[in-house]
Image (cartoon, rainbow, N blue to C red; front, side, top):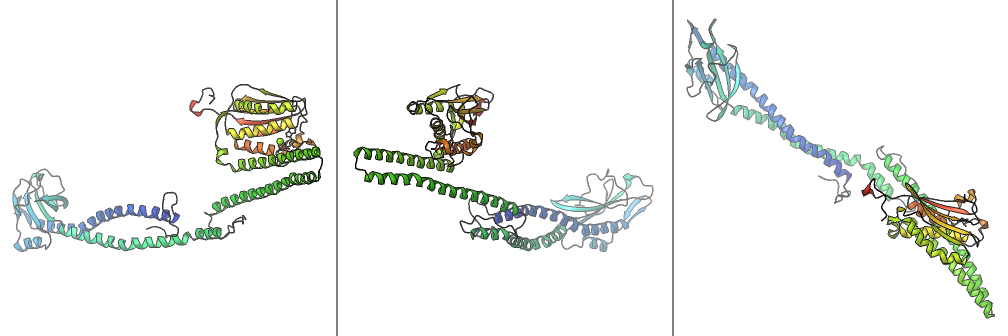
Length: 486
Ligand SMILES: Nc1ncnc2c1ncn2[C@@H]1O[C@H](COP(=O)(O)OP(=O)(O)OP(=O)(O)O)[C@@H](O)[C@H]1O
Ligand SMILES: [Mg+2]
């Protein structure tokens, strides 16, 4: 039996809770049932044996009473009526015999042989004992007793035995078993139905919770109330509400970001429009050329802003291209990226240098790391006046690889150093153009690499130093060996 079709799903991944609980309750029941049948069988046999054993005992006593010792010799006189009473059984065959210990049959059935240990059996004379035996392939229950006269040696005792087949006992035992097991066929299905019913009732809070969630508006991120909810569900609702809270913060941040981005786009677009209107009115070809050049610069600036926005959004969303991380040499990546900036540095008369101290292996995404380095070098060149110096390097520090871009430019105050990582935040007197997204991108990429990015005054003098501290990568298959560049 499984749960109602509405909540039931096929496949491994989606098991219904209802079905799960039911299975876990019924499976042990199926296991316990055979045990209960076996126990019933055992006890029923014991109970059924008792009254018939008593009857056998009665027969042994009756025969014993007929045995007399005359002058130390046993003599028995069993009237035919007594034999008839003993044998009178409609269902089972009853055997009896009286033997001396020497093996002489005094009375009873010849074809009911005496026990093999007739001469040696140890017993209390007069006591009645029981044993299980077999005769002609049929099981027998035998009651027996040794009889003696006062002062008689054990070798002279007389054995009285009455045995009967087990048919009556089996019939009674079967009746007992049936009377216990047949009601179970009714009670167990009834119990299953009641458990089913109980479970349906017990799981109702879950259904109610599902309905509450289903009924929600998609924009409603307010917490779910945990009033009238069983305490087992409270942690689930707590976790769910925490997730809603995070989502709400995210959505708020996204909305702020879109608003900021739109605002930022408006300024360069408005500038472009003014320049275009001016150019329209221009009749002097040289002035016109000049206006068009300004428009082209404006378009460059706007497209840089759009690119920055796209990079930030894609990095945050962590699309597949940006998510794939593998071991790489940060030193080599930095060298290649610095090379791309050499021309630009020369144009600005800045001495752009690269210092190496050997390979530094980290786990990362080459595309994103280049984007990060580009932004740091762009800043260093942008905020350093002509004639200055910019140096990029990676220093290995045991468990860390530290990327540094140091410049001799306008520098940054301690207070501004943290603020500049916020989106669209720019230091007012920086003078040059920019959208304030570069360092936000740097931080986002650092976060995705479990790295820490910071900017601060250059301790070696003028200017600023940007630092990103990465965890070093070790080849886990070569523990204890030297780091292997890949
Ligand atoms: N190397 C540096 N030296 C001094 N100030 C810096 C340096 N790097 C960044 N800043 C300050 O931090 C601010 C934010 O930098 P960020 O790179 O985020 O934006 P941006 O350079 O203004 O614009 P863009 O998005 O085009 O890079 C800059 O406006 C600048 O004032
Ligand atoms: Mg920048």
